[in-house]
Amino acid sequence: ENGVLKSTKVFGFVDMPLFMHVADVVIGKPGPGIISEAIHMGCAILTTRNAFTMPQELPNTYLVEKWGVGIAMPGFWQVATAMQRLFGNNRLEQCQRNARAIEIRALHQIPGKLAKILRKHLMGIGSRPSSVVSPSAYGDLRA
Image 1 (cartoon, rainbow, N blue to C red):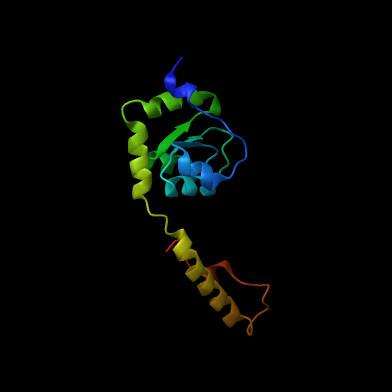
Image 2: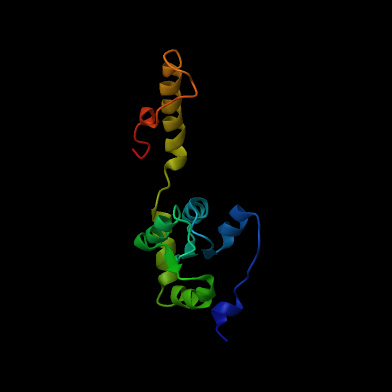
């Protein structure tokens, strides 16, 4: 028996902030919420990338690896192997350091971008029906 796997605890739905605060690794689907929360908390990430990965979540699996914050596995059946990889050669510590070095700025950027969209939308109300707003009126939301 591997000591790492003996000390592993598996939970269902939980109070995520509390659990991430004490966790070393977060295992889950590659949704933007779980990945950004895990990075914010400095946790390593194990996620999956396969034919069943949602198309909008697929890029997240590549970012996890590119940023060096975790491993994208072919399936959850590989969790034990991925955990052994993480706990070998200080990879877990490196993933955690990389996660702590990333600054998630969306929280601070989104309110300003939403205000800009709202201003553009409100300025256009007098000239066209409010239910018809061209996506180009929103500008580039990535900036």
